Image (cartoon, rainbow, N blue to C red):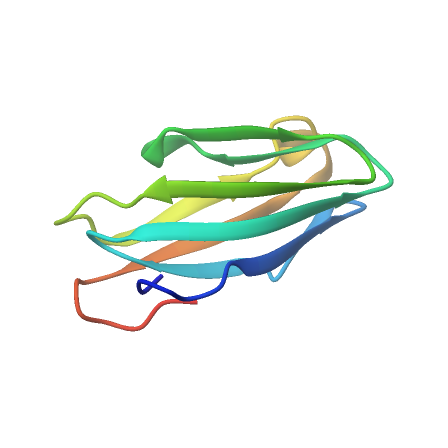
Amino acid sequence: MTPGSQAVAVKLSDYRFIPDVLTVQAGKKASFTVTGESRNHTFTIEKLGVDVPVPANTTQAIEFDVPAGSSGEMALVCRIHGTSRGMVGKVLISPAGGDSY
């Protein structure tokens, strides 16, 4: 996320992340507004140390720093439904100076 940009909205609907691919920028703060619909979930990116519970019918503001020099693809999972229901997504890390969503 670039300074001054708004948080990206993410829905946790049944057993899906919507959108299921998120892009963040290395060396910047990532900011998401995550809404859990009808079930308890988590917004977890283990490799970045992000693990936030999102209770049913609530919205959580989630911010974290993306380490400079990081790159590639990381798993986004719900720890409650990830393995049993396939609730997984991707976080793509773009290099510093690239675009993010």
